[in-house]
Length: 112
Image (cartoon, rainbow, N blue to C red; front, side, top):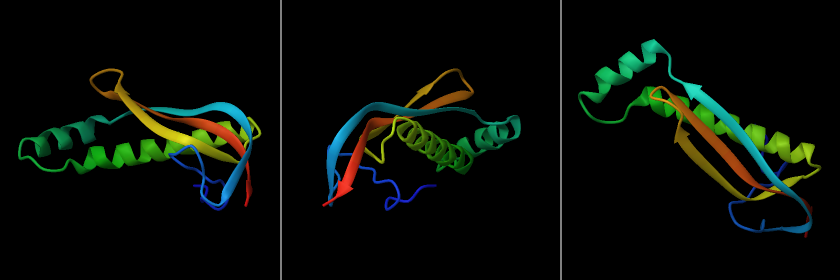
């Protein structure tokens, strides 16, 4: 994973300590995940007793990281060295598949 020092990212429209000198446009990273049958059974049994379903937490964390890495790669392809307005979106594709989208505005920044 890229560090903030290497590739500044912000959920706001600016990045403290940086000046936006150019906008490169919309960038996104997308992944679709499915929990394997074993994980679905374990999660199903765990859901009967309530509480956190760790199997799904793990797959969602991995999915968010993958989507963010793909977002950064797309921004770099656009010639950017930073991202602003970064957001995540998620939706079900089917009963067993989940889409995770990370998106934002690719920008060229320089340190102030």
